[in-house]
Image (cartoon, rainbow, N blue to C red; front, side):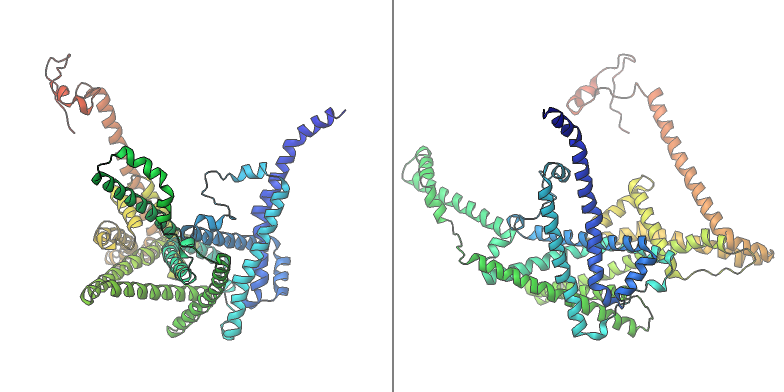
Amino acid sequence: SHKPIRQIARIFEPCRVFVKVVALLVFEFVLFPFGCGLWLDACTHRFFGESWTQRVRFASAFPWTSIMLRWLIGIVYMVAVSSCVSLLRSVLRAELLWFLRNPDDPDFHPFRELVDRPLIQHIRRMTLSVVLYVVLILTFVYVPLATCANLLPGLFPIQLGYTSLTQSNRYLEMLGLNMLIPPVVLALRQSVVSALYAWIKVVGNVLGIAHLVLADDDSAQDAGAVDLRQDLRQELRDENAVNGGSEQVLEPSIDLDQESLDSAVPEQMVTHLALRGAIMIAFAFVSLLVIDVVLLAVPLVLGRHVFHTLDVTLLDDSYKYATGLYMLWGFLELVVRLMRIARNNSFYDAATMTLQWVLRMMRCVILASLIIVVLPLCLGLLLELAFFAPARVELTQTLLVQPLLKNFAPGLVTLKLAMLVVQGTDLNPRWRAQIERLRVGGFQQVDETFAETMQVLVAPVTVLCCVALALPIVLADVVLPLARAPVLWSAAVERYGYFVQFFCAVEMFALWHMRTMLNYIHDSIRDDKYLVRRRLRNYSDSDDDESERTPDISTGSVRETVQN
């Protein structure tokens, strides 16, 4: 009687699994990030000078924009939390983070877990995730902001300046930040890992549990234990050899005396381990709160002071905060390296290494100013003059170029795309090799790559951009007036010369690439049709001597190795 019911249940089982997986994916990637963004907005809106009524009014006027903004903020926060967990995994022992899923685990299959695990486990996991993220946002976002507001009332409200820029400029600004943020994050990662390792080591040594927390100390301890066992075995072998024994008698004695060897390995017994761990976790929370307050207040105050000193009017506090954060990071990095140099070297060696670091920093500043500032500005100005200006301004009107800062983001995007094209193709092997060396070496190898980078990559591209910018202006303002050409001709050359120049450059590049491909096809056809008998067939290194003496059956002569 229950057989039809079982058959119907078996038919609807895939539908049930599909609905469960879709519901879990919607929660993981849609509802949960949106909830995180909404909770972040609720905890931070008053620190940006806006009330909850204004946020509700904005959400009523632009519902989809409000939803997307909060979802994007939630995604960014989740990525930040995942990055922090990744940093902890690189420093702590794996056993301490057993309650967190490891994405690098080869046995971890998220989609299979969505299908295999029962729904009640997923509900429990989602509930724990919601509670954890709510506590994290309250602890590390709201409490530091409230503390800064109580200690420094003049620091708030924080102005983001979204109302002072148009929507198109804001999109270009976001694209520019997308190009600049990844290198900065990669540079900061090592410093953060070093600081985290130092903090855990100092606090762990005070509490006496550093060897139980740090992964490196644990592996070093295991390696020391293995070395001690090997030394004890060697001493027993030597003692047995002196007494006239044999290794056959020695090895069973080692196996029987294994407990004595294990007892000879020093092991640090820790009492009240749970209490020590709780104290360390509490101190970690307090330290993180203090660091959050310092990293929020000091860079913002420093950046505002720098912009006020330079008499630069800017409504957006994000640039001021970034400027102060970079200055603070550079100062701390310089102090740490100077202390390390002074501690491990003499005065003369320390002065020499300090001078080398100063020269290295100067080279980095030169390269960064040319690659990150000059080249994007030149490329953005070329894009403006070649495409946007002729479409925006008529021939009889005066051309007014937009400010250079507005052309920076398009130029940076163009430079990034050009670098990706050069790295992914064989258009210029020397440029590709130099970009790869510059990307891999970074700041540490700037002494070896500076001269070659300037000679091969930076200087030719900079000169090419400057010539491309100056050529139409020279033709329009110098050559044509000397030739007594009409003024309309000068205006036409100045207006459309950059587009014609770009079109000619593309055509020349296409012809050069076509010529290269035709030469390759020509050489391939020549080798296949006419050079068959001069090639070595079935050749290997083992047959090197024999192949030089093998007679060619078709010609009756001795075949020699042809080296191209």
